Image (cartoon, rainbow, N blue to C red; front, side, top):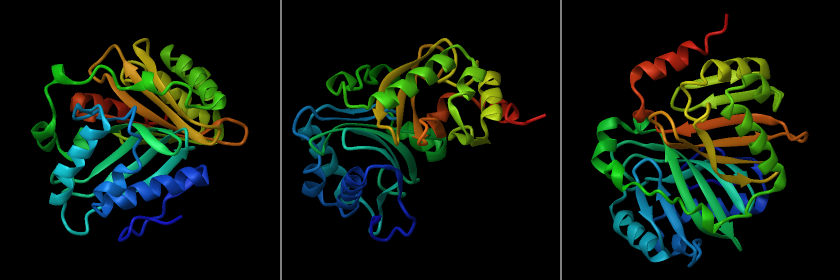
Length: 294
């Protein structure tokens, strides 16, 4: 799998269809080359939505997205890049983990997880999620819109039916278990060698039993676990994808979970991304403490 020029790390497309991987690598190549028209040729004319879920930036049309990139691209540093790290799903919908190098949108790099919906190979909706702490809280404050101006509609109603029944079933079972804070039920959905990752908490746990214990212990801390947690939109196919989550309780109202599935439709890898700047240090310390096995 080819990568953006100048980036030597490989793209993990093991849980994506070749057609999706080719299309998204092309998208990031055009973006990194500051090829405005080439980038915009990969977006559908309508519907077309691009939202940054951490900054609250809401671009609701092809013309607005075009104007946005036209404003920022000329100022990008030489040799800067926006490049994919891991791609999950197919040409209907996907989750893509990617990195924006320093200077594209502020003085620090961004590590993002994008929810991408497509129609006829063109992007109809992209919503980016990332951890503001990794970017730097001061950097975040200079770009973020006021909380009362954040979008309430993330465009998911325009892209219904873009996900496989397999992924919808896995997400339904997982979300039900997490909603009830039932780590034991969630553990049954994971493969024997499964990996659980929470990006803002810097947590990596292996194996269903340990994952289940951790999810039970953190039911009142993680924004995608507990009675307030819900599903906004499901993405992907029988290979991989995930879902955007909402939380009606606690300080973190939204985020995304990437899922890789094995051939038996069990979860082999879960990666959660949300804005860690919305919680205080004590919450992150508690999340780390609860990962200690005894």
